Image (cartoon, rainbow, N blue to C red; front, side):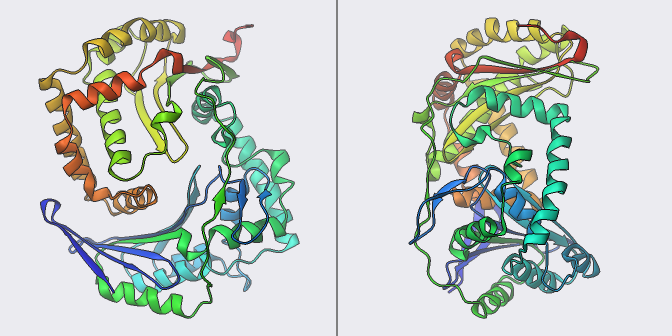
Length: 436
């Protein structure tokens, strides 16, 4: 039974059906758009390395296996090249692995249904052999080494590793060269059979499509495949203390200008929210980060005028089931002065808080940027998937923004901006690395 959900305020309509095998399908028609975008996502990411498959023993698999599995899903028993197949059908395909999800996607302006069938079929037909698994190890090892030499990635990941003592978010998404060489064909099948069950997945299609027709196509495709009902997957994570692992993480790389990133690790009591609480926390955090570090903020302008940051300076907030943190940074001519200014001046901004006029301006700005993003099929599909796994709905974003108050945002800021939870990551040019 297809559910039709109208979001009159946003002039959006969502079509949804949960199929007998547990797959949740969502379609957002965008009549008049040329491009259609589809994403098939499993709630399985890099942090899921310790789990108990339904009805089986608990297992611990090598780090990096979710990313490795993503690579191997493009291997076909027939020997066909999946990317070439999509290209011949006028589509651009891709995939990615994050800490919490693995996604397979395509965009096209023609052959939507043919490409959708290709997407469903290749993701649901794994083919792993000892030979093709062994071959992939060298390719991924090279990718890991490439990221090890990428300054922006090392800066970002250096901050995460400064924050976390036990949680597997501190482990690189691709794993390590040592861990991927432990991966076997049997590991891949174990993880695939556990996490790639339709009941652990979501399919979102956004574009110029006929919703009922698309959902019918998916239903018929899934009905031809044998999936038995699956119970809940049990996932296990090391107990993470509130305290950061280290206040400072310095790395030496061949860069012309130093890089500096800093942020705040969320305490355990502010992690694990679901539904509107999840979305409300994320939205209020982004609003106060814009007040503190956005390009229109007094603090940003002061740092920019003093030459401590450039226009690439930015901020972000990551909220997931099990971990959360804020971060801000970019290139800096003098990371030490920048960090000293942050620690000295940010507490004053937090104590004063947002006034009503500033809050109204920032909220209107956020609403406007969200409305613009609702014209992007890619953004809608990716964000809808993420919020669905968090028990909420992308289209709740504007109503919740309108309900937020200045007091709620100030309270959230004072909860989060705690210098006991503060850490930094610095990339220094080779000659400037300290000997601390």
